[in-house]
Length: 180
Image 1: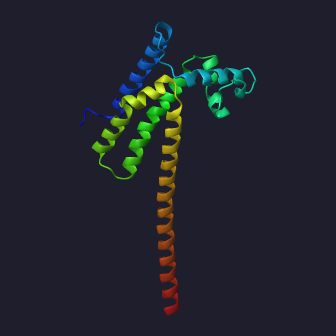
Image 2 (image 1 turned 45 degrees about the vertical axis):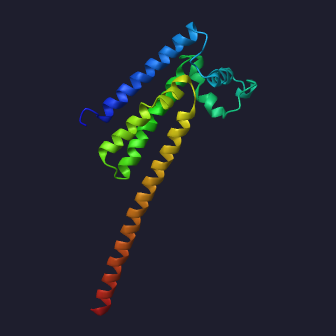
Image 3 (image 1 turned 180 degrees about the vertical axis):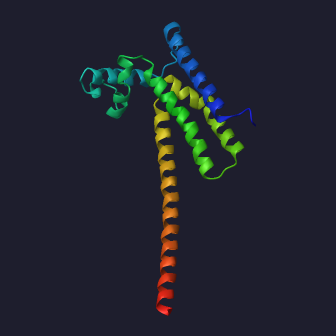
């Protein structure tokens, strides 16, 4: 199990995704069937409109949040694949968040690693982001919210224990003072 270090898994998974994005660009340019998701073209067009100061909704089939178009503005001036890299990075965060949640729930380390592997190397999940679908952002946001809720709950438990302990100590102090 030592050969399956999380850092190595993330690195290999990231390289794999970069390779798929680059392959997708080649396939789009050289083959009849495109690798890129049709919606990605709609997202990119909307981002271009936003970059030029217009509403993303001028793109006739754009029906998403303007925040998505805003996130993809760099498609217009950095690279047309910017969004694919963003979505793939979000997919990597999903793998990380799965591991974090499981570790917080005290799941054995090897199961945390296997769960992360199942996500990061699942053909269904890695293809979604590399083709330009924004679903990995949604998944990452949901898991991040779950992590925040778990952390808030554990802090709440610690605060409650501290309050209970302080109340108990204060009660004992007052009881001792009244007896004395």
